[in-house]
Each structure stands twice: as structure tokens, then as C-alpha cells.
Image (cartoon, rainbow, N blue to C red; front, side, top):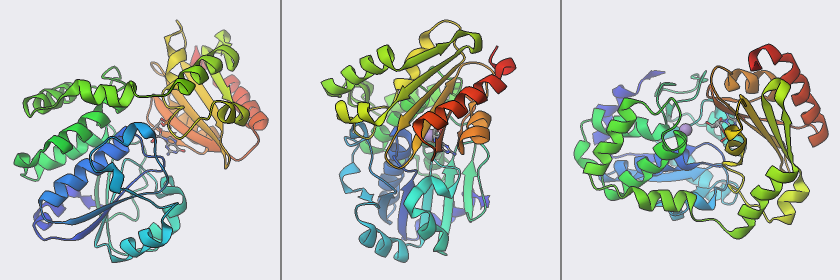
Length: 335
Ligand code: 5GP
Ligand code: MN
């Protein structure tokens, strides 16, 4: 994979570009994709975003989101656009299989592929150009850097600013994770100077849910939470019946894993959600417990040191048993 800087001189020739975020794109993946779309369009490129799956309601407000193509819903149309693409940007994921049903199609295309990502242990093969930097707070921070580094700092529009801020805000846990570096705070100051209205973005991301989600959170914390003080670990177990009862949609479970972190002494919080096609895991840790290694070793996943995800095709009961064993195996690291 050649350094991303090598594409900068090529940005001046208009191209057919497709941008692909990871499945179920979150605020960082969608924000980075849309910011890049708006930026590349100002340079005259023809740009389409194709998301491997649907996305949460709390990213739908982002400028340009209504024209994003959902591959699952519009496979034929999406593949026509992919076949004609000269450049494909892959944003906010470290392995091509994070694009779910799009994986085979992406692997088959021979156009130029560019990776921009901040997850650990990227699978760089298959990418022509790119940048992978685990020290970056978010892919949005990397798009911000790219706009500056490519010599186009005059191209920051209101749309780009809102999208970038949303991703940085979400991926730093509202500036509380260690990834919220001095550079991140300088970025925010710069976006403020450029006209950012940060309260608007906060409200769209965090204050725009329906009652059912709030009641669901209450239910899970009251009835589905197990605490293992001996292991400084909390497990939230969400069966499919809860998702149906509370009419939970994509994105409604985001952030639930953060609540138990406020219990004194807790180092690891895990949540497992019984989705139709798989059991989806999320892990969050405080301090020196490595969630990336944990997710990779036991749950076919990965991510960051303090935040990762994984999956299982076992039943809910079986994958929970696997978690108990993994937790016990990690006792010394959790103390
Ligand atoms: P979340 O728990 O919010 O879904 O994900 C936490 C972090 O881990 C995110 O940066 C996400 O991209 C990453 N992640 C989540 N699930 C997986 C997975 O199955 N595989 C890998 N490699 N990363 C994941
Ligand atoms: Mn990210």
C-alpha cells in the first residue's frame, strides 16, 4: 500500500469515485464518507457513497445522507456504479470483510482502492494507496488532515464541518477517550473558527431518540445486566425478544455498553445482542485491558485498544458461556 499522499497530484483530474464505509456505518464512518464526498465534489469528481448495510437514524441528518446507497437494498444499481468506479475509498475499517455482503464484489474489482482508517492491525493487502494510523481519534480526523495536506484548506464547507465534527465527537466519546489529543482539540477550535455550530451536532446525535429506546435502556440495565466484581466485568445480555418488544432499530443499541463503565472499579464491559444473522458483541475497557486482542482471540472481531467488537454464529446461550470462559481466562488482566 503506497502512502495516501501519492494520490494528491491525481486529485486534480476528475474521476468516478465510490466511497465505502463499514457495515452499519456509525457517526465516524458516515461522517468521514460524507465529508470526503463533499470535498471531492468541490474538486469536480463524480462521487457516490455505497454503504454495505443500512444505518442508524441518528446519522440520517448528516448533509448528503439521503443519497447514500444501501447495498443490501439496491444491489444491482450499486454494482453497476462499482463496476464503473475508477477509485474506491474504503473508510473506517481495517479488513474488507467489515463490508459484509459487499466483500466478494469489492475483492473482485480491479480499480484503484484507497484505505483511510484508524483501527488496529489493518489488512493492507488489496489496497493500492492508503493511510492507517491507530493514533488518530477517528477517520474524520484523518479526512480533516487529508484536506489540509492535499493543499485544499479553502474547501471546508458547512456540510464538511458538521460531518467531521460528528465523527470526531462520537469516536472520542465526547472528548473523554485518550485519543482526544491536543490535535483533536486544535481541530475543533479550527472548525469553530470556520463556523461550526457544535450544539446542533450534539442534539442531532444524542437528543433525538424516541421513548421506546429510553425504556429499552432502562429494561436492559435493570434486568439484563450481570456484574462480576471478582473480574471487574459487566455483561449485558440482550435476547431477540427484547429487540422485538421495544421495537429496536439499527443504532438504538449504540452507547448502551457505556453505561456500566460508570460503576466504580469496572474494567471491562461487554454487551451481546442477539441479532437475526449473528450474535454481535461490543467490548469497552478502561485502562490497560486490551479489548482489541480480546475480541480477536475469542469473538472473530477487533477494533481499538479500549473499544472493540466481535461476533458469533453460536446461540446466545453458547456465546455467553464462551464469554464466561474468556473472562475467567483473563482474570489476571482484569484485576
Ligand atoms: P462497536 O462496539 O461500537 O460496534 O465497535 C467498536 C469498535 O470496534 C469500532 O471501531 C468498530 O469499527 C470496531 N468493530 C466492531 N465490530 C467489529 C468486528 O466484528 N471486527 C472488527 N475488526 N472491528 C469491529
Ligand atoms: Mn472510527
